[in-house]
Image (cartoon, rainbow, N blue to C red):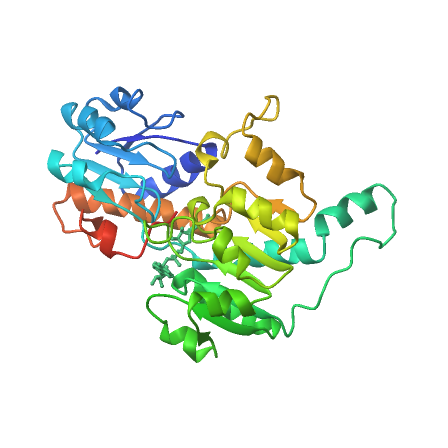
Length: 341
Ligand code: NAD
């Protein structure tokens, strides 16, 4: 099938072309994001393939539908950026990649914890500068800490397993407790209880109306002073200004994040020769106890290869008229517990 691939980076092209040797679709790669303004690029393409920061609004979908698009293939698990109602009304089906590598994201969350605790970013630069002093690098034993896992699905479970290996006490909060996490010894608590007891809090729930700004000034006030907060899930889970305030007062002792609520204007691009206009982001960056990565938690060769494989399988299912278990229906937006990458 003719597939218009938007938001293409070199690695998308490489992995999709490799996976396509088994499918033989006609892939045409576009670097721009899919927006209402770029949607006409997909004229005549029955399939459009998109990533997380594409703007799949009703307006975009209307242009796609008018120009012959029938299938939207998401290279992501999350579909919170898609107007599913509009897609249904316009007869455009939507498929996604529900899971590709929970290990990739969970391991990155652990990487942020180690980076912040042992100040590896500072240590690396110091040694390169022949500065071998240890002042300012003091960390703490992760062994024995209480780790709060908010959202104990596929990624939260992997994360809990790793932290259990460190010798941490595991406390979880989820609307549906996960038996595998209970088997790891996790104790489920209400959110205020988790916040009050955790030394490290890691967010692994989807962004939904119910979880938007889950971390705000009220919930930060319930946290242990000096807590470490990790977000590898979705920027919108965290009220960034409230986190900045929490860092200033010392309630938040460390903040590691792979996502940012306004990341669509920043992440995935080289902006190193530009003046960043987002003052909140710049302020956040300025703190020495903050580490930000640019939505790279998913970015392992295993995960990217799996995303390409499942995306092309989904398209082939559609081409051959088979039902696809990865199809997203409009009603799932509220019911399904995924708003993820
Ligand atoms: P999952 O669906 O397996 O697990 C999500 C869990 O969150 C479920 O157990 C669900 O019951 C729970 N949940 C739903 N609503 C909740 C609420 N209101 N409060 C607490 N828990 C709630 O999803 P997953 O594969 O583990 O992915 C988790 C998140 O990770 C995704 O939603 C996505 O935002 C993020 N993610 C980030 C990256 C990245 O590169 N940074 C990559 C993949 C996924």
